Image 1: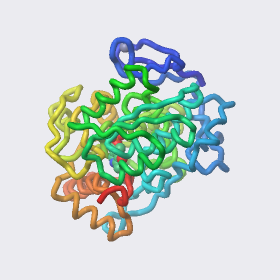
Image 2: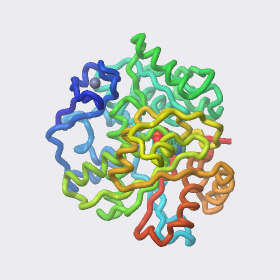
Image 3: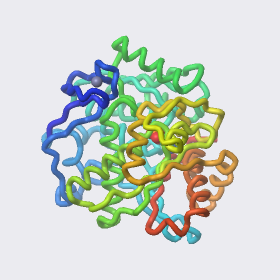
Length: 373
Ligand SMILES: *Cc1c(COP(=O)(O)O)cnc(C)c1O
Ligand SMILES: [Zn+2]
């Protein structure tokens, strides 16, 4: 396949070798792929990682650097939650090398950076994406600087520096952290391996859907519940659906029901009043740090994805997060608060919409409990 960057605003195309992180007009970049073909027969059955879908990934067939970078990410089990929710499946995304689903995106971004000859990457994160980029960058022999807010869980900060990255603790909001990283990128300090800006990240997260498709013998659940902060899993899933549809592997795109934290819900707000773009809100404090994004850069794309799938957006009540974490732990799943928030929102929604939820529902367990206190 051949790939170019394409601006989300003005449609300008760029060679990916330019290493640009945004368009000259300021717009965010997506990927434009031509000659994209993939069928079930193309799955490399003896590769036990998301690279079994190599033919659907943004590399050419001769590309083999990934073999030194992969840590077996992906291929997470799908299991029922418990008898109270007979149609609910959970996907064990925290069973990844760095304990969150971000490894799906990070392995692709770093493999691409390696292919492009990048020597240093820069990234900002509320924790998990930074950990993931740090781990893969180090493994690939690429220098790495990670910017995180000062109040990030100490365990995540420790994990990032353990992987050899330089950690920059930034005062202020999550947005101040993003700005600090951007400043470094603009000064030419390195390639922006951002899970928000860098569209290769979504090529990794789309494998969430490819996997569900393969694991459930081609029967995607009717509803995908997906937590959303910056939308890296949500947009990846949406692109995955669109590709499967375009390839003729599915007939209909499942509904995406996105979850935000009640105390930081800019996309929810925009969705409810029917706006096409997302206004910044103030984060009034939430345990769900992984989705506490007050100003999501790809807000308009996220809204479009939810609307296109006839989806919905729901919020997690702050006072339910803690008890839901305990509920999940008592079923064997020890997750971080952000993941508990996803379930808290779903359980409330389920009570009111049981009768309308016809088929199967799938929820990712995005982050491991050991990452938080
Ligand atoms: C990153 C993350 C999310 C949300 O992902 P976005 O890309 O910000 O939408 C949810 N849960 C966990 C555990 C995460 O690490
Ligand atoms: Zn542009």
